[in-house]
Length: 371
Ligand SMILES: Cc1ncc(C[n+]2csc(CCOP(=O)(O)OP(=O)(O)O)c2C)c(N)n1
Ligand SMILES: [Mg+2]
Image 1 (tube, rainbow, N blue to C red):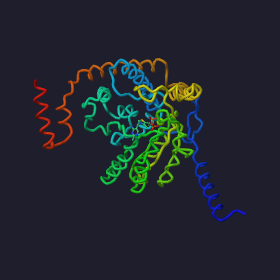
Image 2 (image 1 turned 45 degrees about the horizontal axis):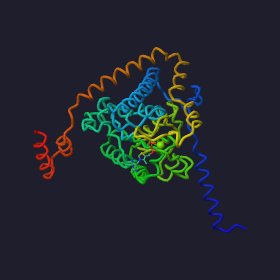
Image 3 (image 1 turned 180 degrees about the vertical axis):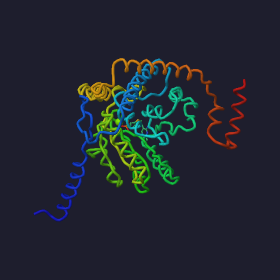
Image 4 (image 1 turned 135 degrees about the horizontal axis):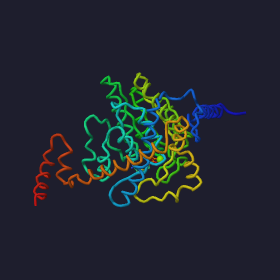
């Protein structure tokens, strides 16, 4: 006969099982571009659907160009984004201008579409201080390199918005690996406790550099981590722009209505390496896995969907590609024209009022730079 403690243990397993069974993946558009979940269809006009496609195509080109520019030594840090367009851009598409984005290092596309000029994104990649000087009215932070730190900052930004009575949300992005960090739990827990208007996105691209997601956590889904913080969590097909949009839009409505934060896990994949610093994905991923995920490509399925509706064509797509190439050329010219950065620049942009020790250093470098 089982002892009382054993029974309790069995019940605890049942509870876990029941929770995990609840987390199904939301999909609206399948790999063939067919609507498989009509009732979850977001309310988007034909123009909005075309604009979302335009942004995904544009961003794919930007990614390809950024990789070449990095190889030519014309860009610095770069984390490839191909494969993650639906996850990144359909979530940003659900936002309003007054919403605040706190990105990770791979989330440069979202902040560009939220208003950061392209040439500044290039300067940020080069480590130039002008890349971090965000224009007035563009509600973004520069990308966070410390894994998970943006989750804590987002709880704070969202709480600030709530206290000011702003009808806006703070949204942040991390990866599957990011959910292993303490900051991840602190951020969602704090935001939950204070019902802060935050949206926490986990882009589960299955790897944290070379570490697969099943080595990161015993949790079957990353969305279920929301349960411990007492907030809603949802897992979506991150290669499906409509599912990502719908989940983010719903989360935003809840946040604005005072119902607090939501955690969204997007199942996605990065086709390229982790960054351009030299990891080799063939050493930790199989070609079969790559092929399996390339078949789920967000651009392919969205293109089919729009073509079937008669609102997309090869001609339209080529226009976007040409526009992207043109914009990239112009932005590069502008980035190249930025003044060479000096030590005095770095010292003088840090504080509203310069502390005495920096003033001393400033004078020393000013003297050196004048020679
Ligand atoms: C606190 C911290 N620890 C370690 C690193 C080194 N690091 C950079 S990226 C990365 C993997 C992150 O993977 P994931 O969260 O899945 O995001 P992805 O790169 O896949 O988008 C690690 C461990 C870091 N930047 N910060
Ligand atoms: Mg990852």
